Image (cartoon, rainbow, N blue to C red; front, side, top):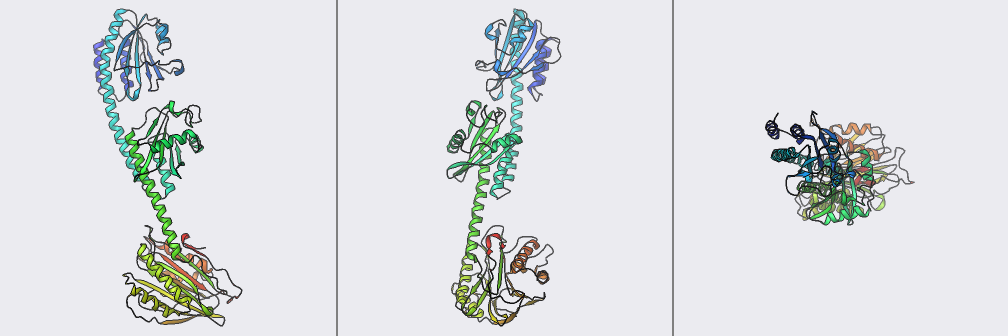
Length: 591
């Protein structure tokens, strides 16, 4: 086939090829078929000026063969195209060109003359095509053929680059969308940090490290690599490594991310002398959210080509927002738990001959302070008072009212005031405060009577308490009364019940009874049966089991639940004293 036919074939390939390899093979065959051509050789060079591979084709051969020269034996000597394609004559016998990867093939062919084309490639590399020819006429024809091939190759390269750009944009958009979905799906800070690292590997890079600023110093918090061995190497990187610390500090202060090539990595944990020496490029981008620098995200590449800075910056911004949201949520959770602890007693008092336990669970997934409260108060002449209450709503307003209600009741009960008068005092205080929130409360005053207890209970719109007898029977204490704060002057009547050895008084908020399953059945329907089944359990286990089972029973969102249990040991009161269960609201129950 004449050169014109090969040229037509090359143009056809240029408009359909998905990679330059097929076009290169066809070009080599076309050039090798030209009269006077003894050998066709081509080399690919990277942006780091190191040779990647060599392709050779001799006349009569069907396909070019591949060779991979040692880059150390073939320095580029800065030989790259200054501006577009360059076609020039070479002397194969010139000793100055002996280091070129094509030199051996030219000598072996015996070609007295050579023609070379140098041309730029994407990503900063370049290529060469060298023809070993027999005479001046063949050299002139070869130079003309290479000049025509330039236009074909340029067209093919541009079309492939455009297609690759479209595919990369789609891939980047998909990665960013998935990153936002994955990183934003957890508000747990540790899980979010791991997801930031995992989402990038291997979709973006071979390895990823995330550092957060703690006390002004970059601290490693997540490491991921496609290789298990390299994963261990990343984990083992010294946080105080001077090179690493300097790079991270510089990146955190820079307005844009850093890109480091092989020469920049020398002396650091990713340089050629390090265990992770396969790293060819590193990028470090700052993690910034709401005007604050949270840390950095570092990507490691085993290739020269790295994602564009715009894409990395977008990914880093999304990661920073996810980390910042998780950190804020964790801080809010800690603040809520701290406030909740101050609204509940840290420890129930010790009263010889009596057992107390309490459990409390926060049911709001949005982490607002709840309105449930309880307490055990010791008064004069051996009086012991138990109180449980519930403020309507959540958040700071409910918390303020909870504190007022609990501490008002506690103060008046400590003075020996009865259950009914104590609720009346609280009612007047709430009415004077003109609160728009409903408050319910239950107060029980316990006094010794022989070997048992007399309980006087008063109720202000709260679920009535239950008595679990030692034999498993469950009785409701018939205490009823109006909600607190609605009417200014209310008298709360008291009712009386007796407790003997092994009996328990169970007080709770409506979060326990109103827990509802998927069929609409309330936990209240199971409460008495569960109390009977748990009659031999300790007061601590009884309180904890009830709150946990109500939470597990609920099909969707739960209300706060508080349970307070008081009782006499089965053998009757013991005057030697007994350590009562400490309640830790942060743990969600008694311990």
